Amino acid sequence: MPTSRGFEEMWRDLAPVGRSAVSGGYFRQPWSSAEGELRAWFAAECERRGLTVETDGIGNQVAWWEPDPLVEEGAPRPSRDPGVLAGSHLDSVLDGGAYDGPLGVVSALAAIDVLRDRGFAPSRPLGIGVFVEEEGSRFGRACLGSRLVTGATTWEQARELRDRDGVFLADAVVDAGLDPSAGLLSLDRVGTFVELHVEQGRDLVDRDVAVGLASEIWPHGRWRFDFAGQANHAGTTRMEDRHDPMLTYAMTALAANKQARLAGQRATFGRVAVEPNGTNAVPSLVTAWLDARASSDGALAELVASIERQAEDRAGRDGTTLTLTAESVSGSVAFDADLAARLAGLHGWPVIPTQAGHDAGILSDAGIPTAMVFVRNPTGVSHSPDEHAETADCLAGVEALADVLAELTSAPS
Image (cartoon, rainbow, N blue to C red; front, side, top):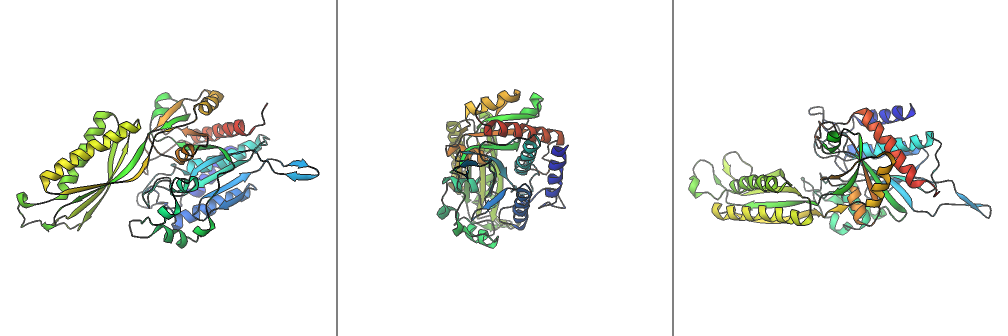
């Protein structure tokens, strides 16, 4: 079948890009050589299909399949109807999986192949988009590319962000061969956005179905906890004389775990930096980043506040101090319920919530009707080299996405 051959060939092309020979995981950070290779791959695949690719000043990309032009007074006239945009992202978390992001891009390309094999011709523009820095793995701002094109974040704010090596985002973009002064993608012609994504959980596994649709995204965010103490000698300083911020951090991590479990929410400290980071020294500063997610905006605020209260209490006992900074917070997102119900009715797909953030949530917040298609993940593992989806389920996702795009770009009956 052309569908299977096209999808699997593209997937094999992507497999080695940015992959660690040690862990098998992916390091596809934004504005890196691996990400540049992925941008070039996407442009080539679009050109093979006769789609013209536009790349903006920071690396966001979009390509459109235009409907046959109308003829007016002997001259062709392009469609002015709002278009349907499908797509996702190509970057990864550090040592991430193969499917988070790229599955949505490859599936969108394959879905266009399916529609053409069916002899389908869209009555409105159909596009494929790729947004940069969705994971926030380099500059700490999730969905940065889509936030910039929707105006949720300004370039003046973003350009001053630094990565772990102290590189400014503006410099990283230029070093990648891009020109920020060229401007950002316009979403003016996007009437609907559809993002296919591997499910990052086990809901579809439990339901024993290959494909589902999203109802909502839980509110979530990232907070930086700076625990400051006093550097000192690990051998000569009595335990009772120490002002050790590592103790304050350790208790805070345990408190976050407990509070999230009690409330049925999510809290994770996954990144820590220590100064001076010596084996034989009491640290002077521990900086830790909290990822917190909850079922409502109020529940998220209460979860973070409860963790902060316990951290402050412990800091008082340890003789340390705490500074808390919210770095990136996204409110709850309810996807267009009528659109989800309409698309679910195509095949009786379940409509489920997700706790993971996506570009789809940013576009939805910007007022663009948005839907998400999920493909079953047999283990539920994500953001890991063990992330996986069966080829048969991926192909089912391609067919489902093709059905959705056909439904959304068909002429009204």
